[in-house]
Length: 181
Image (cartoon, rainbow, N blue to C red):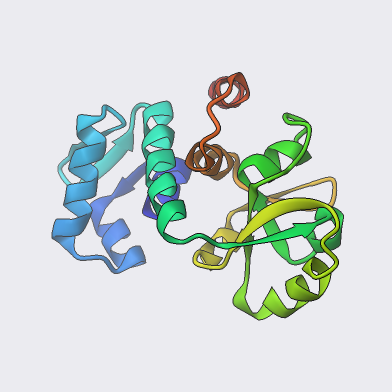
């Protein structure tokens, strides 16, 4: 969540991050120093400025990979159009919506806890593509874009989640290039 905020804002104060995420100062500074050593940000006088978004997104992707190893999510075979009203697509499933990959298999989707019953009813049919659903980050619902009736995570999160899924393709480099222009 913290890395998403940096990816979106690109310039923010340490004070704002501490207030928004309610993390302790030493933990925040450990993350910021790591990002600074990777060349992703510059940290000076309580201000954070993103200077290399690609480095930030690759760091975020590595963190997502670790999260996905610990929090497995639940995988259901579904047709994306049957769940699009209550999930946010990200990673490979969002790349599929964007026309960048041929199928959304093993992509990421975020779901609110209260919508799991709907998902179970749809997923029990076992029709469609295997998609991993996560409910650990409901804040993602505040950072979305709508494309063709599908709600997607912001492009920065799509890239980070795809990297977290283990996808390293030219497609991601193209998306990063599009973001720069």
